[in-house]
Length: 310
Image (cartoon, rainbow, N blue to C red; front, side, top):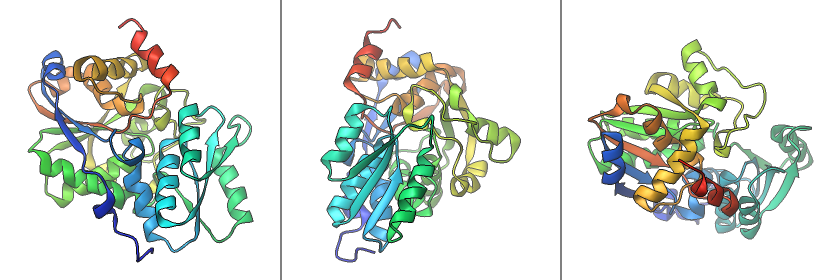
């Protein structure tokens, strides 16, 4: 542990709690957005990354990331005086690669059609046994970091429902723990791309079901092969269910956040709003906390999303 460095609770930015009446009128429910786009490095991932980097004694950290965790871990390691290497797909958004490098980390790009990110991380770990291999989602330290957001949500209102994007499950598991810590009564719902619906299939099967390959969804933060095992032990009981979101609803979620709330979100961050658009009857008349998990989107992608016909 970096004993001289402050703990996460002293460095994290409290989340922005933003009522969205125009969006709520459109959807037939009361919507409060839980906005992590203004968190350090632009997403909730800083909570997890700092929790990991602060807690382990290793001088260097390795991780695979499509962008947000890589940025967050790079920034956390810079604050803590540690080295950092991030393995990223060649297809990662240019803005995310540049952001990782801007925080002083080394980016190792991999063609995921030839070699998985995990395989490349394993190669680098074998070369540097003093480095800690950090999972972006499947680590108790990640869950502990994200639980800080769950506790903040519980303190922001007596919500009927909390809707959270699901990829590997680190955020949703952490929020579940945080809500339980505060004995919140809210039902917890996952929002997952239908193209990457391994979590929904896992809940139905009662065991982890994995995708055969990284799903080609617009929500790049949800392009995971499966839920993490640490997360699954929490989510199988904590989730009220998962809403599977079509690509068109993900895109419309991005637009609605811009047009109705004047808020920029990346596609993964808009999954929760996409879930409300996909199944409004599930939430009609209820008070819903909708987590907007990040705002790091490639400018060209964002421009195209905003100019598409609704």
